[in-house]
Amino acid sequence: MKKTVKTTKPDWRRLDAMSAKARHVAARGDPDAPPLTPRDFKRMKRTPQVKIIRRALGVTQEEFAARYHIPLGTLRDWEQGRSVPDKPTKAYLTVIARDPDAVQRALEG
Image (cartoon, rainbow, N blue to C red; front, side, top):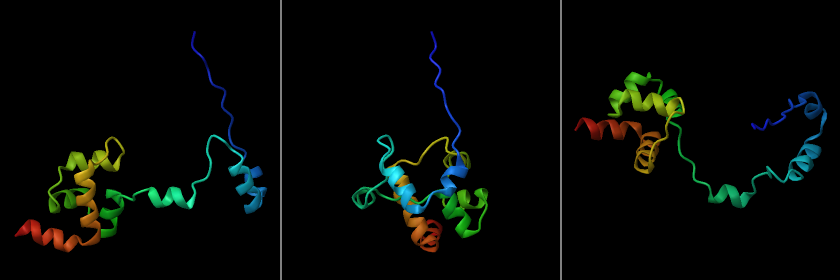
């Protein structure tokens, strides 16, 4: 027998009517989704998102893929959430985000 889960739509009007303090108190009281603490943020590592990097550079997917020697299909999979870059690729994307011109010069030379 298949179990069905009853879901309810959020009442955004009710949320909008709450003060910031009341929202914070309500969020802290939810045992399933406690707010992140400063300690949580400190231990988390940020990885630049390829779509944001590409858009900041003002290039198309095709241009970005060609410039940084990334297969176009792979790039599209990352941007559409079908797959995620592995650790070495995340490091490569971090370098591209920080100094895209240096990466391009290194690949051309």
